[in-house]
Image 1 (cartoon, rainbow, N blue to C red):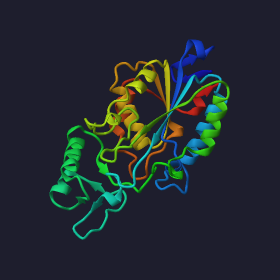
Image 2 (spheres, rainbow, N blue to C red):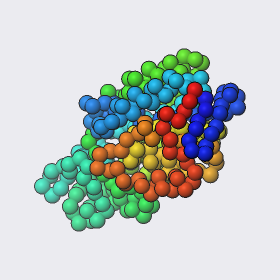
Image 3 (cartoon, rainbow, N blue to C red):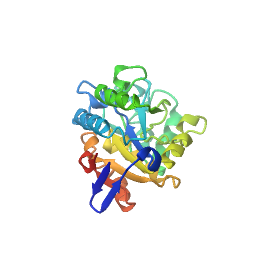
Image 4 (cartoon, one colour):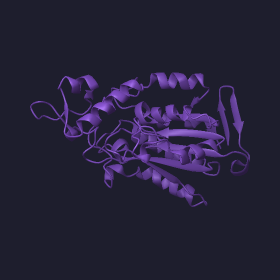
Length: 277
């Protein structure tokens, strides 16, 4: 395989021995990637088709595949049923709720008021993304939480060559968002699943080249990239497959600062066309 992006030219002759080429796929799930999904991102199905083709064309060069899996309860801090206004009406999807909204009694959590207030304050203090109410999505065990069919067919074909793919679950704690692959947006001291995933850090740190794709560019991909940049152990060349990720409509610019910083760090913004078998 040869990668040709501007002045960046890297040829892998025997990647299994000379270059650990890791493909990190973020949340390639039906609720994001299927037109009937609860939080469908227009264009995500086409992203998955391109990513599936990329895997099939480069299966001899990919050393490792890691897939993240978003999972939620119905009663989740980011879902409408967790909230109501003074009239008992739930917020519409895509409503932004701030700490001030709760203090001003614009929105009420159904329970755990103090914990929710602390959470919203922590989001703001730690410069994390604003708290958005999403449609119920990626419910644990549901069709919407399952991986895209075309992508799984491609990954299965790669695995039959003698490989093992691994999965990273995130989002199980209903009291914090968990956009990024490495940690929750707000780490909860009493829940290790929200802390930095040290095993994932170790696997990423062992890679010479990390290629990132998945959904959504605006949220879970951006936060995964941000969290990778927080880990000094991860030194491999990072490449974003820009034609295999799409932003949630209306949120196209929320992660501009993350991507600006990534460019400053030398992270490569490429596409599947730059990879030549």
